[in-house]
Image 1 (cartoon, one colour):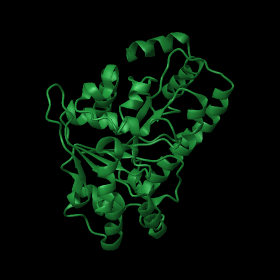
Image 2 (image 1 turned 45 degrees about the vertical axis):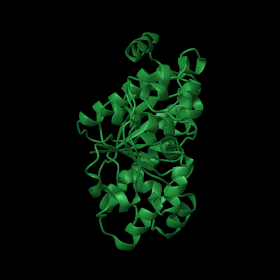
Image 3 (image 1 turned 90 degrees about the vertical axis):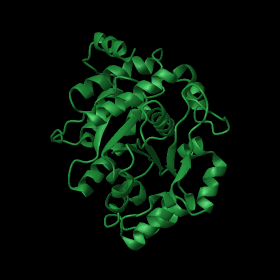
Image 4 (image 1 turned 180 degrees about the vertical axis):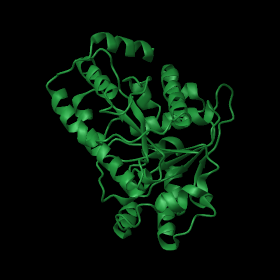
Length: 326
């Protein structure tokens, strides 16, 4: 089992779109058993997979991640029946490549506020790691959709990171997106400190909303690749998600998608390749010693240099990268 958090502290970079896309392809295309844990109070992933009514019904029926957290907080015992809190998105019975079953733990916005007021910042940061994760061994992938604009005070979100084996970071090739990375890395480092080991690992950064025609892409991509090659930033995925309204449409809960082709349209292969690369990187991960200086410490100096447009990376390297993408 791999537990992967999808996280960037910058909002609007496509965390929920990436979560839904990866979940659909791992379950339908790769035949994996998938659970999505939605820790974002906006419930975007949950609504995309289940629909707003089903999410509301799950919350009213006390089947939510916050009710589960409340039980763990009271009992401090592993869950014997996690299915009591899980909502199933059933498989589609159609021809083609039908959408497969995906299980979802939905959020409850008022419940999140309540439970975080009652959780101790460090004492309770490992509740999911200690009492939830052991009961999820039936799954091949557990994807944790984390919200943006959070910090160490958001103990439920920290729980998602602490229980994770890996973190996948969606980024956009522009300065505003990159400026959110220091806070992202620092919260991941905080989770590693709580685990007392370099876990979760950053499995990589995936370029989202990528348009090769923009000046931001042409100026920022060389800088990102240079920093990654120098291990001042995590590795960049070879595959990416383009900037297109059709991918935003793929998470529209009002559309009754039944197949992968219907949900992802002409960008089926883009999402498929990102999901497959995540699977390969998680399966083939080789433990490495942690960097002597955390990414959070390095990135601030790098961003100062990025904002000045300084890079020694040759344009040919960008062409090589684009060749790999295609």
